[in-house]
Length: 169
Image (cartoon, rainbow, N blue to C red; front, side, top):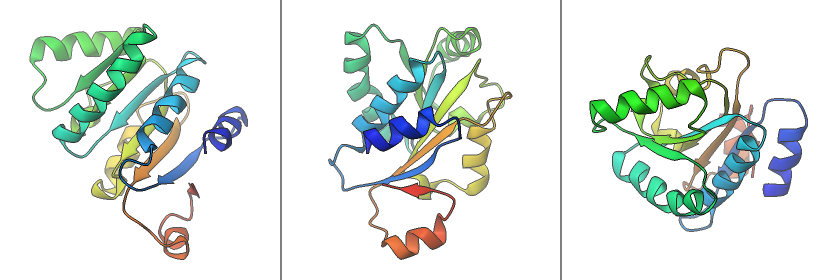
């Protein structure tokens, strides 16, 4: 899957991929490696989760790896303090913050990226089409690559009907 994603990112076309797998199968680490590939090209990434608990879990797990690589990472949720929010917004606009994990708080109008290159959406079926679209419209220059993840087993024929615009892994 990582190999497919790598070549898709290099293709010059926008990636739209559904990553499906059981809980614990490694979807998050695949997403993180994808983020690192995008960050390597000087773009920013975000991962949106449907609940604060899941966003915090992703942040805690990925922060260990990011810290070991001295890669700045932060989290933005509904309960993020105002002073922290201000710093996150500034770091996003300056491009200093490359990886942001969050909840619906990422969709707020005040959240602006310098160069969003990848939007990862976990448990994507829990977000509406308009919400998902709102996230990837945060990049004014071009639409970012999109990786949506789900642990809900979707038979391939149904997935093609529902998500025909997405490549499926």
